[in-house]
Amino acid sequence: MKNKRLRQIRAEIMRIKLKLQRIGDMRPGSLTVQYRNPEKRIGPFHQISYTHKMKSRTEYVRPIFVKKIKLEITAYKRFKILVQRWSDLALEQSKLRVNIAKNKKSE
Image (cartoon, rainbow, N blue to C red):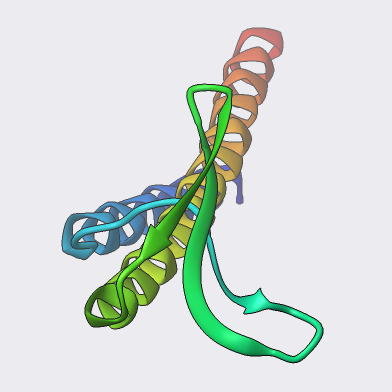
């Protein structure tokens, strides 16, 4: 039973690695619309806010780059989800291996 689960984990980790290879350009952050005059909602513009190397940053995004930035942010979020799942599986895999080895010794 445990060996079967180990095989399942390895297979899922391989699928995650393949998905990670297909992730293209990415960047962290949140893209928002701000206004030069917020009370009257006049003069909208886009900005991206993110944290990199423990430093918070906010940058203006030109309209021609908004679509590309949205795709990069989506890719980054997907990357984070996949890495977290890989980490969860790796931890489970390690615990199973130790448990299997411990059970073999006690037999």
